[in-house]
Image 1 (cartoon, rainbow, N blue to C red):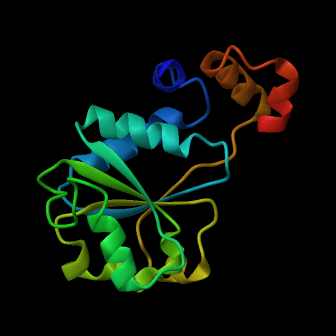
Image 2 (image 1 turned 90 degrees about the vertical axis):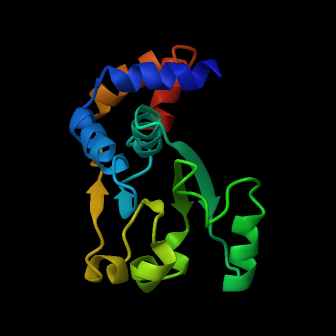
Length: 170
């Protein structure tokens, strides 16, 4: 839709602090055949936008997946019901799994070489649980952006948003 293309165009301009560096980090990661990466930071720091931008540049399709409170067999069934994409063919299908709620499985689930073989996972979080920090998983952290820079960026991203609402968004 037009808002997504506006978001990509605005993100490409790197109008806010550190965005180019973060996008380059993510883009380099996307060249690997398999990885588990935590992408964390406060809401509104453009994590999702830059993940999608980097994936698109790498020719990867982003498949969002939310882990809810469900058993492992139910989780596996949910993954397999996503359609043509299954855990067994994601590497061949150029898929990047964007995982929400990864902390519910704990860090050991994301360190199992058999389970993650040939897969690309980004574990998107606002806060990183202590157990994940202790597990020393790879992290890309997005810092809060200065309000004025974020307002300029949001105005370019969504010119239809009235200025009074910018304070509610940031």
